[in-house]
Amino acid sequence: MPARIRLQRFGRKKRPFFHIVIADSRAPRDGKIIEKIGTYNSLTIPATIDLDFDKALKWLNKGAQPSDTVRAILSYKGILYKNHLNKGIKKGALTEEQAEAKFKKWLIEKESKINSVASENKLKIENIEKKRLEAEKIINEQRYSAIAKKIEKENLKKEEIEVEDKVADKTEVKTEVESKEQQEPVKTEDIKTEQPKAEKQEPVKTEDIKTEVVKQKVDKKIEQPKAEKQEPVKTEDIKTEIVKQKIDKKIEQTKAEKQEPVKTEDIKTEIVKQKVDKKIEQPKAEKQEPVKTEVVKKKVDKKIEQPKAEKSK
Image 1 (cartoon, rainbow, N blue to C red):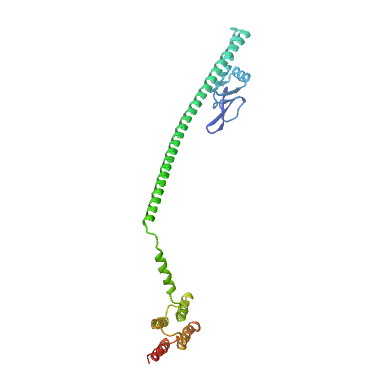
Image 2: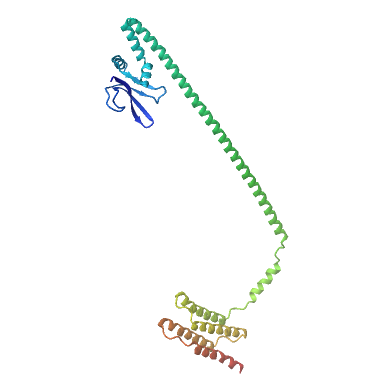
């Protein structure tokens, strides 16, 4: 089998790059080769071909058969035309000088054609880029115009809102001024009448102060078990509250009757009350039996009723 001039693929996926090789026709594509004579890259415009002219012509003279793509490459480079002229020289149809002249003339024409095609391709690429840039400019101008319109609308809205706010502020100020004018000025007579009322108030009595102190103490003693998170309220606590309420009522009655200043009897009642409070606190601290508040309540009631009976006599 004769040798064959063909392409051997290299490169990654969808980016091929070819070697022009001499190989046995029975060998696989990526198999063993006899010789490499050039390269071919089809991705560039125009395609780049790097070929050893003399080696390719030698293998053609030996009888190597090129593949279809390699045949096109050899004709593009003028190797096939050179081989044709050499055959004419062997037959005697042409001399070497005539063959070289014809080949030089062909090369000049071929180069002129290649240059014209390359210039046309450059112009096409430049025109495509210009059109792309013009289209981008038009799109950008449209975007800028749309943005400018939006900004103008927003500014107009802001101005309208500011004008409305100013008008509203002015109207509010006017209404406030009118309302103030309509209101009558404060008279000096009202001020004078208020002063003697404050002067006529009687001074605070010692009885009121003492009763308030007693109330505060009772309230604190009732609130302590709540703060300590003790057991729920028992019947004893309820009874102490009832006793407290009765004491408060009797103290108010004494105020209404305008009794004399606090006597020794009132002091005794306070002492009894404090003792009751201590007896109520002791079972909570010592966990003893609860104090019988009913007996204490009766004693307190008797001692409070005694001064009333003496006065009535």
